[in-house]
Image (cartoon, rainbow, N blue to C red; front, top):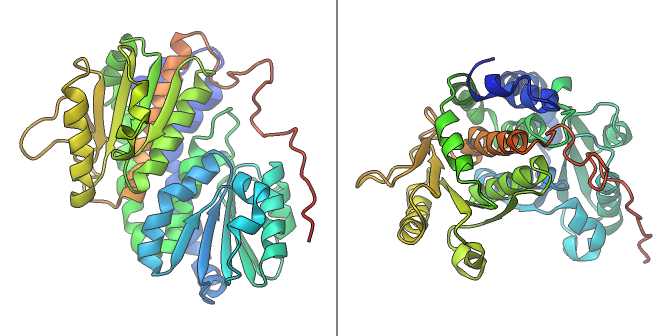
Length: 382
């Protein structure tokens, strides 16, 4: 293994996380084949068009929905909402206030989190017409088992390797996001899979980000802010979570949109803050990303504001520190998120190793768990 991951391949307590980050290009290609082989059955299942599509999951799985929602809204020409299972379980009547024919798309690495099953059951209690597309990495998980073979349900299984053993979801996140984009967006997206995989391979194998990540971590940041607009807003949220998880909370991370950051959250900035802006491939949206880059670089120390994107440089000249994702210059932002998230995965991984944290298990005392437990599910009264 070469590049940044090669240097971390033998780090203590990092075996699973290193392997699972590195395997993503291969997993994406496998998923492309899985969805292509499933196309006739998928098309038949999806043919009765639902008035509303709800993309749901908890934590990272919920952020997959946030990355995809607006892209699929445009592609499908119907309402697509990203709603976390944790929100559905806490307020099912609010989340399903409109009794519309609904396709509930459930993302789940293990399918054993308490909210995963509860969200599907509550949808059935609140809605008169609901079908389930379950996208999961664990064929033996309760979610997959409950919906396998059910009328009105379709279980789309990811490659077994994508059921990440490391604490933080990496290949499971990108794999399920790609699967939903291919399954719901249609075959038109399949032509991007190879390009995205090659972009990721360049990041991993050639060590494209080595120097940039080293320089970022040499600043010894205590806070990292991730900003993204449109579909990249969900990517920013997932990136912040990766930093928090992999470093055991030693680096505080948060996320926002390029425009939203000015409305209060900007107060988090101090001399030990680094800001990473995911630059949209959409020409209109990109203007706002460039505006926040220019604004922050005018007041923050050199090297503390990083642009990441398919074409992160401004047409008028370099914006400064820039991590280009070669080969992803013209893909839609939901697809751009797949190689872009490797930046956050690698930052979190290397930051953890430098601090003596075991990325595969950054919470050895068990105060935070890989599969959430301890949740009491309360009965919904009529």
